[in-house]
Image 1 (cartoon, rainbow, N blue to C red):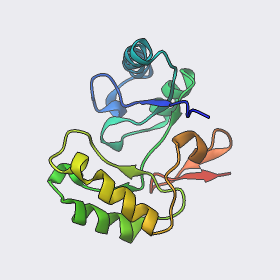
Image 2 (image 1 turned 90 degrees about the vertical axis):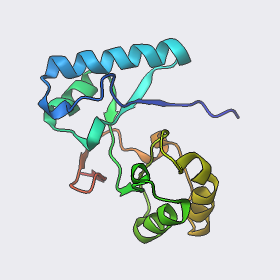
Image 3 (image 1 turned 180 degrees about the vertical axis):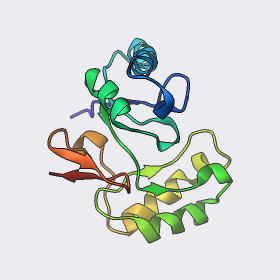
Length: 151
């Protein structure tokens, strides 16, 4: 069976969303969603704010558009120029069931490091799954580590 991809929104303008009003957040999210939907033909299910920012206004804006706010709990620091070995070490020391790993697509080493990182995750006994298999959709809160906690 073919996997149906679920898409996430990371904002249109990469603003500090905690400083925006509810309406400004909704407008930014809608603009990004429209681009993604026009390109992919699919709805957007997830939202992660720039800089890892979120507050109740951001969460309410995303939920008004039927998106779930997600966070990460492992930062590879790929944007600082970390090598594949350095990113793997960060992952190895922090990974747990349910971890979400932050990586960027425009960094020096990330694209060329992906296979090594995937191999390390599998070697540690973890399986990479789509967000909709990992994410709670009801009765949860996000803790200070960026993890969803079932209520």
